[in-house]
Image (cartoon, rainbow, N blue to C red; front, side, top):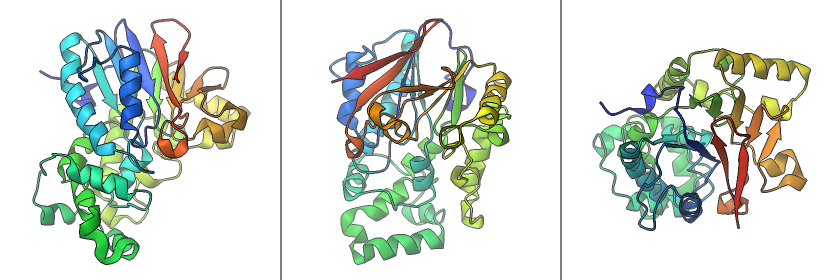
Length: 315
């Protein structure tokens, strides 16, 4: 039986794990990284054996071609298992926002790219629209007025609603995965969300998105300390946070947490475009600004067996 995003094992077996930070629509950048690391060939077919690819979320937001990225990832998810490999796409805060119909960080370029993608909806457009709150529809109307249909914004919103073709596919994915002692999450996991089995955490995010129309705070996906948004380890470091990180890692039998969400240029400005280890190597921040809006700094984190994590850069 084929594995689903919800049935991931914490034992990935021998081989390589490659984690890539926030893409923000940089389709060409993703292809470059996958080609240079030997995960795909020149025709974008998966060719790597015994390899786990982790995409840290925030494929959407700030421009670019997220539809093309989702098309590629969806296909690679089916090709990789044939060679004993897996692709893990995590939900970032920009995916959560789009699933909730909040498009304030999305652009015309994204609208047109997603509208052009061939994703059959699970429901009719009108039924898909029922999952978008009246407040978010009003916000969209205020932002774009009568230009909505021409710009492709409505198609974008419908496609990414929980009942839309792209949205339903996204919502099946995890917010956090643990592989070979490495805990991957877009923002971060504190005690409130990190001391839960991952299947419960992932279900919590999904239920929060599903119930968002009735909950003004959006539940876990929009909470500032939730897995999509948490920056406590980065913005408020200290002995107490060090202890909290270790508690979460111990709970999941992991030795380090790998996060995206916060560009490393905002953590240590002189390290712009570089992967940043924190907490004596127990946390790796890998949002180097791959998206063109952030400079297009291509990078990946390679994790192989018991070897030390290796930062990879692509000029």
